[in-house]
Image 1 (tube, rainbow, N blue to C red):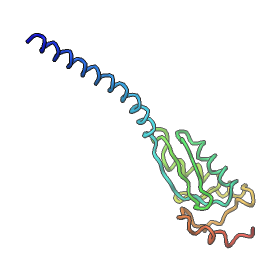
Image 2 (image 1 turned 180 degrees about the vertical axis):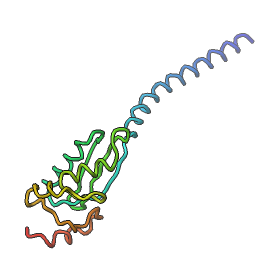
Image 3 (image 1 turned 30 degrees about the vertical axis):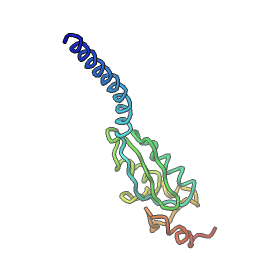
Image 4 (image 1 turned 45 degrees about the vertical axis):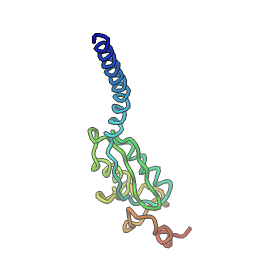
Length: 145
């Protein structure tokens, strides 16, 4: 009887220690994942024309504290931004872009900054934003390239 009880206790201890080790291994990646998940992802329209616009727009967004990444799509006139909501918000990002001279869906670009943009970057204020991408050729038909 004592032998069976001893084996049962040893087996139970063995299972418990395995669970603890497994739990420790799982805790580490969960912590890392929760840091990544703290970022909020947003997409919205931003008017602009070219690669120089892309650099200026992304630089403006990346200058906002808490922004992890920014990618403006030249063809779709749309930006994807990842940011930490505890440090900034979407409106601060819209305002940073507008301050650099570009219109967003919510904030009109600064007229003074717009006038300072290179000629190739002075976009049409009526330009469609946040496009699906299938209008690619149509969107360039009014340009003299």
